[in-house]
Image (cartoon, rainbow, N blue to C red; front, side, top):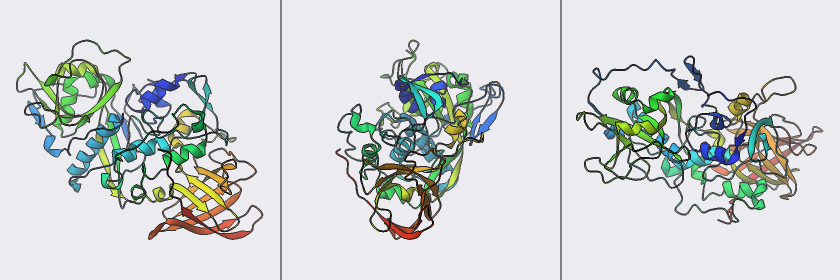
Length: 466
């Protein structure tokens, strides 16, 4: 489904779709991987779409049973409305295991939370509706969402592709993650400083998650034609090749039985869900079923080893299906260590700096929406965060710049407190971090009139009200 420039999307529905599978107009606004062509195979940022007709049929050449359960990591229990993360991470863990990296437990929290923190408000609203008209939020407004369920995200249908995630031990789910106080509809959260205080709270995103030794990422994923999500033969074919299938569907039918059954058409208002299909069994042709890894915890189904069985008929609730074709070798992700709240207490620039964004996280979204500069070039995403002069929340200035392996360069323009995402002017700071002391930044600055000065900052331990 292609999006039209005139389309308007209800904000509430967009937030729901941000968490899952609706690969139509809603998700395209913030999910760059969900815009397939229906005429020929395409590849965009490692995401492939197979047009109808390229999936072969015929069960004779496939075994009657495929069981990939032994390749799976333990079944998890989701703690937020993030089944789309859990199923994808489960497929990712299995892919790395096949690649020879052993049993790895990746952090669902990191993928879920950072996708929301990295999202920038970028368009005008028409009442409750998002449009495709570019708008840079005012400096006194918030420009990122609260990192909560159903918040807008830079990743949705295809998480763990735009940025790498660490192992669970570096970014575990907190025992008591807490909810924002006051409630999310309170005007208190219209201010970016308050949002930053909540999102950057180390109880939600500990420093260990930002300085982990290695991060893991999906580098290529294959989407099947939409109709294949309801086609047992198409799903079988992928499973028979040793690939788990990430399956998006409408949660409906009989799900209390040992084998889930189709009963009646799903209500389109029913929330979507995502599971990982890890096998099938049609040795009894009268009762074939797929084996699924669900994120609701282990089941008590006899012989299922905690997995979920769904009938072939239940596939009629399917919406989309995909599978991982390639994962990236684990590597460091140096930009993460700059995220957080920093205090500048020496030099000519004194104040508080919140770094909540990394450059290019919105690049594909800007490109898909056709956001162009005065020369007609697609606008670059250079946003880093917000600087509060002298620590005064009433003196915010948006900050743009670049991030390298060991250093960060940022620009603060006191004449233009809310610059567009690509404009780098004003006071320049070039800072580096010491691997042995990740709570310090140190370097030099350059004023607009050419004066150089020493600059340093210290990471602030912030704790929100919840």
